Amino acid sequence: MKLLILASLILSGPLQAATTIQFWHSMSGPKAKVIDQLVADFNARAENKGKAEVVAQYVGSYPEGVNKLRTALIGNRGPHVAQIYDIGTQVMIDSNAVVPLHEFTSKDPSFAAEQLLPQIRRYYEVAGKLYSLPFATSNPIIYYNVDAFEKAGLKSPPKTFAELQMACPKLTDAKKQKTCITWPLHAWFFEEFVARQGGELLFPANGRTARAEKALYSEPPGQRFVSLWKTLVDKGEFANVGRGWQPANHNFLADRSAMMITSTSDVFEITNKASFRVMTAPLFTFDPAVPGGTVVGGNSLWILKRKQKEEEQLAYSFVRFMASPSVQESWHRNTGYFPIRQDVIDSLKAKGFYKKYPGAWTAIEQLRSSAEIPATQGALMGVFPQAREYIESAVEEVLAGQKAVEKALKDAEDRTNKALERYNRLKQHG
Image (cartoon, rainbow, N blue to C red; front, top):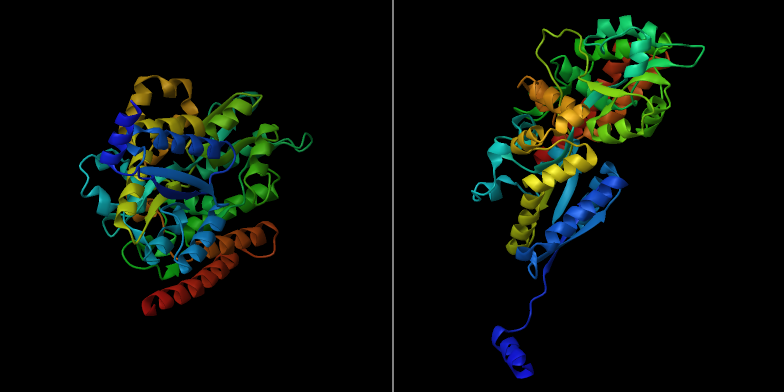
């Protein structure tokens, strides 16, 4: 028997070690555990044994991950696959360090591109090419305390700015330190409410037809939303919890605000933790007759260029796995991020999943009902992180009474325009 085994080893040659595929991501806490399990599932598949082994590494927050990747690329290092937040799209394309996903999927009939929700796919398509795989996708929704609404005699959450302002006095109790609504002081909400009103963030066409040249923050959609925000704060109806994500959640779960706007990725956690009944609703808008919608948020998976093309192909096999129905269903069930695939949504709906968890259905319907216009496709610019800082500073100045709405937003526009001009000039000559 020993001789037979030795003979078979000699005939088959030396055993080859699996190629290590480095995967950098920015998911922390429970979501990181889900990522680790998905990676383990990929590595355990028979077709990957001895061929590819993915090693997942947490590289910090979204901005930290981008900075680490930028540093690694300068030294000709870096991962095979990187998870990058939505607003990093232009920088990744401009890096010349990625292989567009389209180059793999166009040659792979097994990749069901037609199953990707068009509203999600459109964000990551640039000049007709799908550059990365949308993975952890989300948009903001309203979470509301059903018990507080019933007590106030309200049957449903507001659909318009005007309805919100009528409802808020009924949901606010200064003596009990209870406010009507809260959301994090984050530029994402400014961007979303501009798109909700059909407004574009950048000229031309949100940076979709050509490189973005100018910010449009002080146009009517932006002014209307920040003015609403300021009015709510001045009346004591808004809980200003600052820039962090968690303070808004804590405020809502502590029954301090009757409504909260935050990501759908928190839907299961918030629903399970609340000591009161929680339901969700789409975002309100200024005029429902004006076509608009929400912009997909979250992150996508990018394949980085390698000297060995075989490694790029193995990286693609992992990305394709992450787009598979079983992975997308597991990711959705365990995180709250919605599936990128229509067939997964249809399957879960048929199983009664959304009857059991109606809160998770809200974001899907909200995204699918968005008008197909540049406003909802999302903005592209290479200075997005800086731009968000400028917007958030402007909002802080308005809420503190230091600047008028139009002045603060115009100042943020000017700062963004200068950054855009520098970035575009560098890319033109670089």
